Every structure is written in C-alpha cells, then in structure tokens.
Image (cartoon, rainbow, N blue to C red):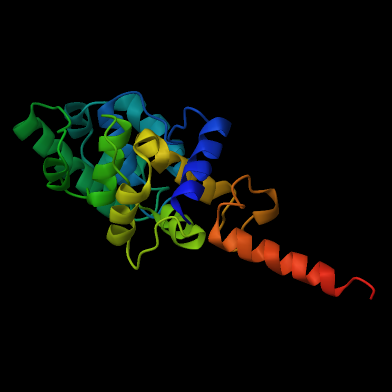
Length: 223
C-alpha cells in the first residue's frame, strides 16, 4: 500500500465513521482501564455484560477494593481467565490508591507498571481516555495491517511502530478504532468481506482478489 492509497484508505473510513468509538462501555477513566484489563482474550460483549453490574457497585479504585477479591471474582467469572484478571484488577486498584491518589496515570510507563496492564492496554487508555495518538495492536489490527499492506510486521510491536510511521497525522488519533472495527466486521480472519469492502481498492489483498476474479471472468468468456 503506497502513500496515496493509505490516504484514500483512511479518508474512506473516516467519511463512513467520523467519530469512531470503543465498543467497551464505561463512564470514567477508571472504568475504561478496568474494562480493557478485563478484555484480554475476551470479547467486548462479554466484558460489557460483566461490568454492567461490577461498575454499578464500584466505579472507583477504592470502591473496587472495598468490594474485595471474592466479590469481584464472582462478578467477572463469565469472562475468560477471570480469577487472574480479578487479582490483577484489585492489585492495580491498590497501586492507584496508594501511589496515584486514585487517579489513572497518563504515561505509558506508569500504566504498564500496573498489574495486568501491558503495552496494548496502556495504549488503549492513552488513546481513548487522553486522546494520545497511540496504537493498541490487537489481533484485528495485526491482521488488517498485514493483509492490506498498510503496516506489515512480524509481531505487534513491529506493526505498531510501522503504523505510527505510515498513518497520516490527521488520522492517527482515530486510526486505532477504524482498524479494529474494520477487522472485526469487514476484514475478518476466516472470511474477509472483500466484495463489500469500501477500501478493497486500496488493499494489497483486495486488489489481488479483484485481479483474480477478473482473470477468471475473462477465461470464462467465449472466444
């Protein structure tokens, strides 16, 4: 994907969805951090289902600590790896209360020092809560970046660094959401919807499929 195609790619996604949002449900920065921490290897739907009750009871680090580990574990048990996630959430809340006055830190280093918070989670918080041009490379973004030729890389960090170089500045803040949503609903892992894709003409894989289809059509024409 060349520079002109990248510009068209994001301009098209932007026109279709000017204000993309995370599908995790939250009302404050702490809830966002907790939801993202719980979302590792889980769907946003399953996380939202659990946090609906959890956040109604505890929407600050101190309130979460007051609930206690057993109660939090019970409330998130429908989410994968719930025991480990509950422990990490409570440990994170303790650090937030003791070291950050209950506030969410605004640097990647401080966020990644929290139990259960890796680079991807930190990038989501920086991007969604604080409007930083950060790229949280999940499986969807990794797939879309490699399949389209937007930002190929062998691992999430390589893709993140390539995206930060290649995405035009005007689209950087929202690019994370556009790519996730595109991968979730259009550029799917097993059955990419290339024929219905609005940006397939910009995509390396999309152009290959189109050429193959056209070649097949010509081969089927009578002489």
